[in-house]
Image (cartoon, rainbow, N blue to C red; front, top):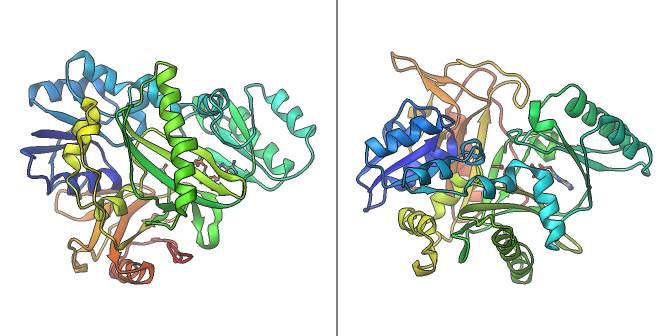
Length: 422
Ligand code: AMP
Ligand code: GLY
């Protein structure tokens, strides 16, 4: 089969790395890809958001399956565009991808179908939003831009004063552009967080092993939120809770989408808070998580390609359940100085060649570029995702952090506590 992967981050590097191992694969392309995907997949110089360019390429190159990494093309309707050209594209269509594209839609979906989540209030008008805050008892609250904001649109506020600042950033200073046309206030929930990624064709669901992301930039979950600083998988979830997550959240969500004529095919990512009252939906994503994908795919022993193909064709029922490596995987993300705020690009990266990579240790490229001469440079906020397998969390952590010590670039920072609580 000829396969096209769309995107250019660590998630897409891991997808290419895993798909490359499939005996069903003939040619593999990545648009636009990055220096890490280059040895695995032929680079295609088309941006992930150029839907017409991508479908033309897929038709010309006889691509059998296109696998979309990021949310932007999915929310823009890439699956619909490919379908118009009779090309198979794995992922939710535009109507289904709205589950991530609009947090307001996702919250109202949960309310309509009694899927457990925090209490919420939605506002477009800044005066009304301010007055909502003025009229509630002071205390913690979460403020979210409703649209796509690369994981940075959420502010967990300790009190109403902080929430007023977040509202001003979103509705007045327009920090997130049109993605901030609406704010969603959410009741602040406490508990352990878990990410659950499920593969579905709209009928059958195949849950992947649970993972734990570390969203805040600093150790001990301090500082602003990022796209994700590191992940450990699996995380122990009691069987009773796992059953609740499936029966009260994942199945009802897929059914709810069907009932609203938004059949969901692709990866459904549910960010969950395990509260004393039971699991609650924090967010939905219409795709694989980044960096959750990197450690998950290193633990996936089954061939990924037939699973994706079956989901895209609506035949997931015929597939065997995926087999997971019993070991623990830890992924630590090395970031540019300043991230998640402003950061410089083009800083030389040294030492990746000193790392002994193999099936148990991979340095996935998240935001890198390569000069003509060959020098590797930083090209994003999240630069590298170092991912290791070990018999337990301590062993996986030790391997990932030892590899990180071989690597350097000016201003590099990463969390030291990924997977530490496990
Ligand atoms: P999201 O992108 O919506 O998952 O939000 C990013 C992070 O903010 C989550 O991983 C949580 O740590 C935190 N968060 C989001 N919503 C809530 C909530 N309602 N209560 C408490 N924390 C939240
Ligand atoms: N790591 C969280 C996300 O991909 O949204």
